[in-house]
Length: 303
Figure 1 (spheres, helix red, strand yellow):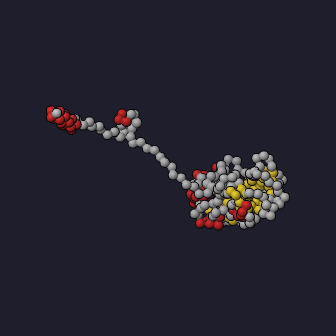
Figure 2: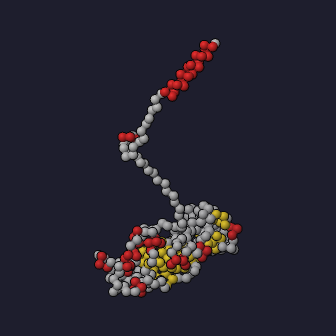
Figure 3: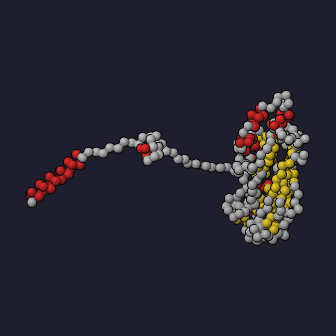
């Protein structure tokens, strides 16, 4: 019995000694820049993370040119409502049934919760008057147009700003996916606000506008000696309020018109969402459906 204990103790001691006596294996760290050390792929390795946030609608259209229609409201969202009450026939672009708030169910006409009428967000003090509005933008860079580079200029093509008209027209009636129409509806645009900025690139974030400040600075001082010659003046003819009929016989309605030597820069026309109103006739009959119509905005010179 004593022998067994002594033997066990000796074996245990031998095991302990063998642990400490065993050689320790060492490994070199992976050398950076060496493909052979890391299975054919050298270190360092990288990966990326995108952290994003957006404010408002910042997707431009595909238009280009010295004079262009840069932006119009992508959606005017008059909301989703429990029913149509003939005593409250007006709806606003912030998704409300005017004077009948109990009828508002969801924020968006397509049954989602968020209203899709996007509003202008800008820290440009020149655009303070149109901040928070649904907006349309006309960019006028005609004074920076290089006449010598025009291959076949029209007989009336000059470097003068202005001489353009912005209008809007409905393409048809409000219609559901099944083809039901809400006839004789009208869109009202009230209290048009307007502003002009020379910080075009800051507003549009489009590469085609990135050289505007430099182009303006390089204008011929003998030909463009002052702001009047450069067309740096507000667009003077702006329609304060107007109605757009939603029907097959709808006609264009003028939003604004720039005279000669007006409007160089980005001209923004905006409306508070509560000032964009959809008015349905009291005789309108509705189903459980989503109705929509298209508007076409046109920038033209008539030359």
